[in-house]
Image (cartoon, rainbow, N blue to C red; front, side):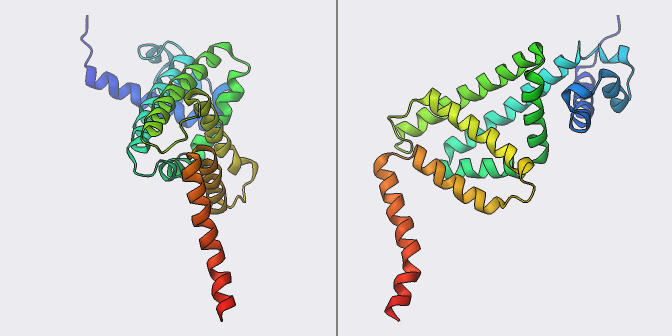
Length: 220
């Protein structure tokens, strides 16, 4: 039996995943076939099954890679001195300015609605992402950065909805003012997440900044 070189095997897996990624972006999860993926990866269908048993197995491998990336991103957010600013940065670069994430996120939800096997993959992704967020929220609550009265699991569900919604915004509104949207998201998250005392101080700071030009003009 011919020995498999693990390095070459892993590289070929990644080549196939890259090819699948391009196909899914072009034709969607439902529209892209294993034949399309094989053509993009320049391999035969028989060769594909040495690496992945089905199209769903390819998607699941892509989800696992995405979860590893999400864990790194949430780790950065939880370690940041200002968690809301770190979360806003994630929403900007991971959602509002990330076209491929927008396309794949919405298409994955659509495919999950009609494909039970795909729905299981999406549910797994959501469950792991939710658990990562729950841990992050609990840490931030202990640090006094998030309202301790918020339920971590329910809060994680809301934040996932915000992330999904942010990805949909540029598709719904191609002329979206991203800077304005980020400012409103910052206000939304501050009002939702900050402890009441912190929120009151935040409102006072914003009010002072807003009224400063008006007060200056009156003095003149």
